[in-house]
Image (cartoon, rainbow, N blue to C red; front, side, top):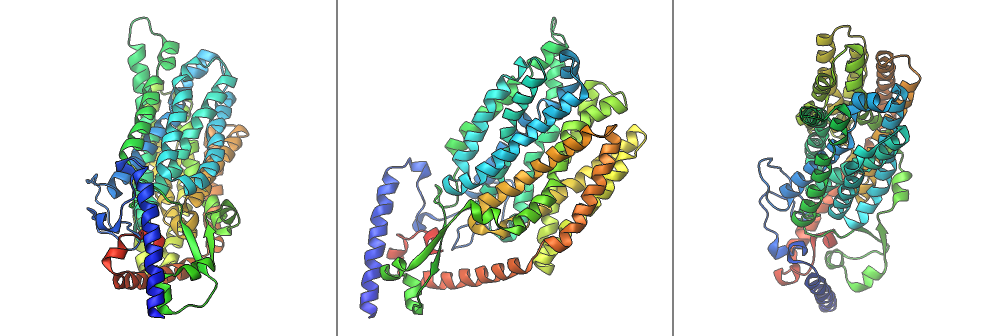
Length: 519
């Protein structure tokens, strides 16, 4: 019996090895999938999944840290382009003779298009990987960004902002890429750092675009209209450059090129030895479950996190769209000064979102998934209270101070949310990232509609503060953690047993089996 099983195993491994060699020969050398003998990484990693169990920010070693840096820089560039029009809204409003409501509708257009883009791109990434998807998003967004200077009326403004809004889907690629590169135990920190540094574009674009505007208007013969119409070529070029770098320098995952995961569910009872080698006979009786968008859409935990993310990242998007105009109107600041003050809101992303992820990871070590849950609830409630206080500030110094404190908490809430996301459905990680990420944009659309019906921005911010507070408290009954703790325990046992089984196989046959297939 043992000889028969051994023969089936060797035949199966030889067939797989020949097929893999044929696929490798068809691929460029840089994108070939790594074999076990080539799996020597700079970082410590899980020998089964090949995902890193640590991160070193100052390293750009391939594949883990290079993927990490490409993920956040691509999202940073996308974010700068996505909100490149918002800091120049006062100049555009004056030049084109627009009303404040026209600008609000354009803001809604920019985040509404991202909702559909994120819903669509998440499942796509589950099948083609993050690298090509991310590059396509950036290249597509570069086109309307380049032609933004041709806007003539409110319709054109809404269309251009809607098309550029597709760049916001780069967030899904950023988070999914990091999920493929790093173990879930450090997912909160890694995803938060990458997402936070990408969101830093919301602050940089406020300072960058008004800087380009001031540089243009300082040239002889260039008035205010000339200044904003010629300000969009730089972010468009940055998008195209980032797209090319992703394609030629990045890896989808530790193994190299991306292969969609398949979960095998055994329908027959086999011995321990047969489980270790999975003969051809057993494989024919196995039910394969692939990534599917229906599994994501039917998961109530996904929608619970969508609601929470709508109140943190959705709030950040809404504030990025309105804060410069808020200071311009309420405190009488100039375009350049209002943009620089508004940039403080986004610049705290350099550390704030990472803090949220680290807090989530720390609470997880002490209290498991309940720790992640209640860290999110506490941060969300604090966000609501601080937004209410910010809306009531009567002077410029007090308003700026409260805005910065509120910014730190809202971005920490985002990091805490994505500390939970990788646990919801590992097989559909891209889809879950897409759905939850889209929730942020849905929130931004709703908050924009709320502002259309409020007499002023101060009252609008106060109303939103109470909404965020209530939704934060709603996380207590809606976010359930029992399933996550059970799943993490099973995964840990599975990895341990898989490591033992892997060690029992001879090294020659090991080289023909990829780690993902062992899972």
